[in-house]
Length: 340
Image 1 (cartoon, rainbow, N blue to C red):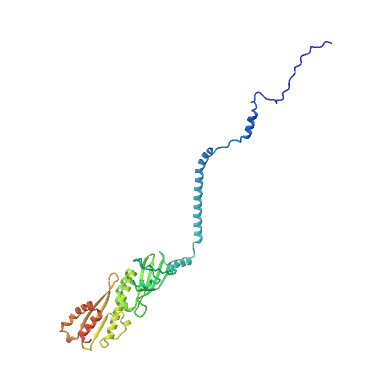
Image 2: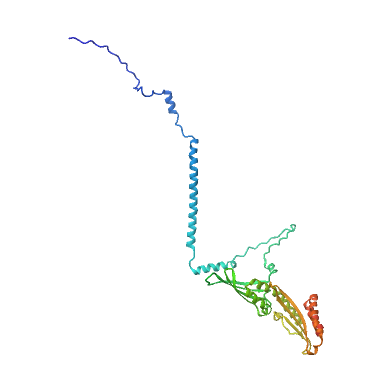
């Protein structure tokens, strides 16, 4: 049996390295692999964040402004809703609120009392405050208000208020001048005015009161009352003193009875001459009251040819300016009637 020639055997040495494809990249060195494990991945830097913050900042600001505007609008709507729910609808409640508003000045609490003492070494022109300012206010006006009532009357166009003011001028007593003003006010305009004063004051102030009622001016009326009363009291006191002095020449009246009387007559007997003193109180255009004194002599027919009595009027006016009213009356009575 023939045998084929034997081929030489090729010994293939086995390698311990794992299979590696030459087309792939070669393995990195071991040292490089270890460095890669120890090195953390790179984080984005702060510079990379800044562009994103700059973009978001205006967006956030616009959102915040819109939120604030919405919050303001919500608060306004809530206030309007509360006002609508609290708005009174009852007519009586509306009237009561108006009355309370009109009378609020009457219910104001009293101011606290205080006292300040200044050092004597510090000169000052400022007046020191006082616990009782009423006496100081009396220096400018002697009017005392006792009541002030306000009522609401129905009206189609606007609110019509009726105000009633009461008070008196001077000291409380028989010689005081009490008054009552009744005003009707439409809006802020006085549409009606009426005044009531004693009968004795009407004799001197009647024309002025009527004029103030026509012109609807309560301020001028009150100013005239304040100016008139001291002179009326002085005139009544003078006439009362003269009647007490000359008991046989004139009628005997007390001071209260002479209030409003402007003429005083001194008579000696039934057929003798008479001394007539007239003291008029006239109101000026602005409400100032002035005194006008005159004196004259009335004689029967037997003295008609004697013209010396005419000079008494001028002589009496000069005496009033020089020595005053009382002494002028005394001198005139003594010169005409011979009674000292």
